[in-house]
Length: 200
Image (cartoon, rainbow, N blue to C red; front, side, top):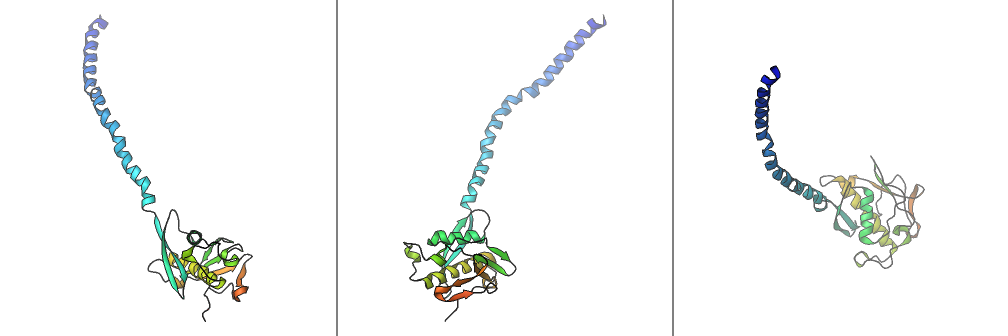
């Protein structure tokens, strides 16, 4: 008897429950299209940010020349961190000179120490053929241009626009931690002496 009397109540409760769910289940299909159409709108910023590193890559400047004759400026773009090695390789790529390093550039409180390998153009001479824009006539002009260009580029690259470039000392040395010597030119620089091409 009790089960029979509860049957209408259960049927009524079930009807109310189903009618109560209907409003919640009904809008879901109508919400689907906007949900499907949102990903393209969300992908657009992602796509533009993926392209931005190329468009807004970091910039630096190479300085090619000598302190006596002046320097030409060559802007470059690069990705990642700016390093002395990156700048030196960029000079090599631009000029065609072999600027292979004998060791990583050492940076410390006293400045930067650069070791050019024995196979570099500093010791082996210019490439053949030379790039017309960077043509040098002799070993003296080549050595001075290589050393002055590296020095100036590193000083400008790591002191910033408001810094004092000449305050950053650049040291050159040879493999085996030997002082830089250019016997053909009768020039040498002690390990503890910052590079400066002798005048006169």
